[in-house]
Length: 230
Image (tube, rainbow, N blue to C red; front, side, top):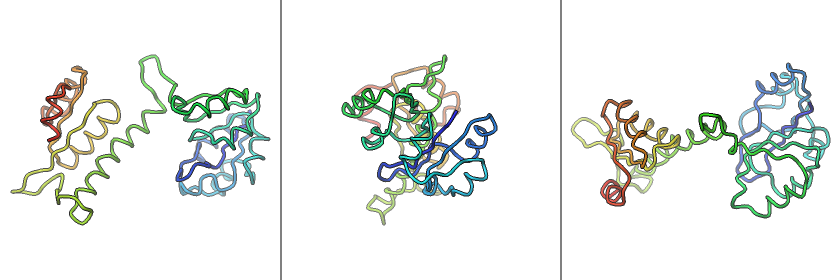
């Protein structure tokens, strides 16, 4: 199959649809992979790395879509990109179409087969491609939150882990799904006093066992949330 990896067009999107390692595996499996020039530059991946993995570098989006059948992206395509889609194309990307009617209608009009990463669900109910992004979001939430607790960043001057003789910072995590558990892990690792809140008692029981009762777990009610976040 002919596979294309375009440079992402959305503002501030630095990710790329496939790494050189992924390209190398696809080429090894007998596929032909086209990568748009500079597609990985904002991720720190050079065109030379893609070439070494067996990719063919093309200059433009138009050239890429013309050559490839399967398009592997990260972000939902812009309208200018959708115009390049033809009925023979297979688009593989995060789509999140629920709040984007115009994009949805234009994708339908293109006739292409569009597969949203976020809709791929395994038999056990897990979402294998969306989950890593949720893990990143959970850890980033704690990292960014702790940054803005610093006095010089407008915060109250709290250190999440505290120091001997000083109270630790308190972190409340609402929801113990993939993102929530990632945030809990990050906050606990920094030494914060962590409270996890969820409506699923089995998740709270799992957290209690995993952290040997070293974090607080609360069933989600308006009263419990109000007390925890105050």
